[in-house]
Image 1 (cartoon, helix red, strand yellow):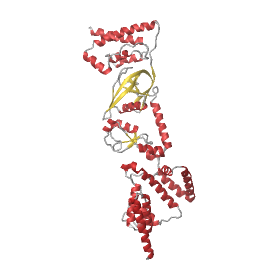
Image 2 (cartoon, one colour):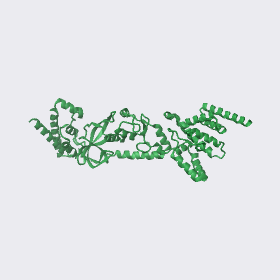
Image 3 (cartoon, rainbow, N blue to C red):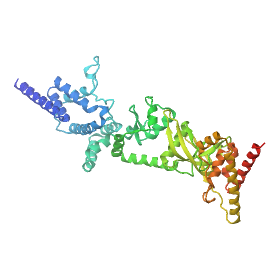
Image 4 (cartoon, rainbow, N blue to C red):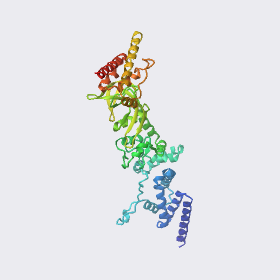
Length: 476
């Protein structure tokens, strides 16, 4: 009777101590006291209930308050490591009944029809907790197969680097598998992770590519139209910090892959993206309506690399697109809720296609740029005279247009440029020539040869023939 009375007093002391620790917020110490209570009296309902509650708080923190519970997760790792060390310590003070109690608290209760000897203690991983990793299972298997000697070697290997590094970082690195931080779309380590309003995380570029085809979340299919308009992607800083701290080598490799891709996309001579649509000319604005998924991707890559440039070519039935085109520079992009956009571009340089190719659904090409051949002496004076004559003819034609036509042209392309002070300063020649070619009522196939001409004299002569023909037709 005396022994039972002392045991009861000791049990009450541990219970009161645990309750005091809970009120002070010292959860781990309180849990330890309740486990001691269970080692003394396995049937103590109060200790079982409170221990179950504390285990639930530790193993399944509330997911919508992640920043506040990072410390809990870190404490849990250190607590589990401490418990593991206690198990392997010869001076173990807990009885086997204690571990059966803990297991029954953390696991799902057995079915009533099961026999008592069929019940196996099992600690299951909560749905929102990623503590159970493949690395644990592989470590446990190696420990069982290797015996006590391998366990001792493993302990020594663990303890040596732990003295020089942060114990918490070492513990997290042991349980954190890079595959747990992979994007579900590209199956690679998260790079610039963003969270959707519905709470799913993807790589920024992976999410954008999915939204090119469907303005819905790739996982839950929630509507993301307004998300597309605002373009305010919520960067997941916590995820980035976890990867940076605990997976530095994997992050470096992921960054290298991304940099290689960006370097390839930013090359304006090899694999230059080609928009197959209409004629474009140097110095002339070219607004574009972007609605096809492949061109959404193309425009976005041009913006991400910083080049903001792509080629424009006419369609060709045999080759896919013409052998000559103009490089366009994006000045602004306006996005709409259904994923469409309007790109404000302007022509920069002419080019000749060396090789036709394709990437991710849109056309690409290896190109070389074209420049006008400069002339001097008598040839230069003759060129100047021809230039002035053709310019005057162009003014006559523009002024002969109806007011509505002229306003529509100037609203789209701007007013006709003035004469250049030096004819041969620009590698593309005078800008008014290209403006005039853009507004003349010519088909694309008739405009295309002018891009290929590298002689300003030939180009002016061709424009003069067109203007004289139109003037002659008008007077009929």
